[in-house]
Amino acid sequence: MEKLHFQDDDELIGFEKLIISQPDDYEGRVVCTLVRMKSSQRKKMAVLHVHGFNDYFFHEETARQFFLHHIDFYAVDVRKSGRSILPHQKMNTMRDVQEQFDDIKKCLEIIRQLHHGPVILFGHSLGGLLAALFAEKYKNTDLFDAVFLNSPFFEQNKDVLTRKLLIPAVASLGKKRSQLLVPGGFSRFYGPSLHVYDHGLWHYNLSWKPHVAALVNAGWVRAVYQAQKKLQSGIAINVPVLLAYPKESYAGFRWNKKFMSADAVVNVKHIEKYATSINASMEILVIRDAVHDLFLSAPEIRGKVINEIIQWIDRIFPEKRNQGDK
Image (tube, rainbow, N blue to C red):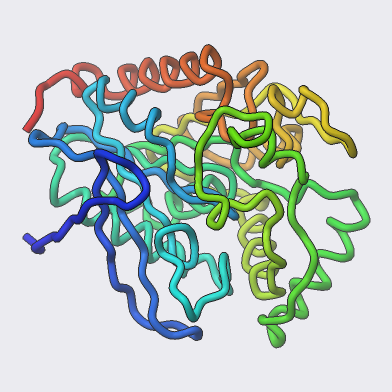
């Protein structure tokens, strides 16, 4: 078994992190970071959470809730995000989704070393898109046993002209001019709806999850565009899937409390539409009054989300969750 050297996490008290060196890429040195709660006894079952764009893992409450349900909650800050950003790197840079697949794969391999029960791959937003595609690509492996998709980024939340003409043009440009910076982003009110310094409930690092994301490059646009087109054309996943997302989206040019009870990042109609592109034993959960990241919704909403996930886990893995700790 590979020797693992977890160290205290600088962001979350009671958590530890494993810095994983990956092969160098076009920017130089690369790492990803695996985070988990400290515990003298590991659970048999585990999940791996993959965050979205302009994001990182800070979901302490979520991890503790799953731990109380006898599930170890791991999270990866993928390369060039959160704990894994290095001084020479541009935040969020990506030219091919395989880059992040490599981080997910390495983390799942480590979790498999440590846990002999079911392992569930969680993906949120861009991480949800990647988790779905990863699950198809690696479906003939034993890396994971189920997939949970939290408001996955199946389509750009833009007008038809932008989606059909502008984004494909930028994606084409990204083949040769991958570093070209282009405008993008999401509602400027999403971050303030979450962060405790504004209207929200959550403390997190605004350097790693800023309210306004840095400009992306054309290579990132190309990678995401190709990934979305692949999913939209149809994929097959041979493990159980739970797809969950808010009941409605909300967009506005002024602050409104509705940002705190709807999806301000993706168009949920796109999720509903492209869910049919996934050939799997899939359950769909639509949550009223939830925000884009379901785990960051109001207390009663996120409590419902976790309960629904636990019930799903118990349906697909009867009696596995409560078999005891290692």
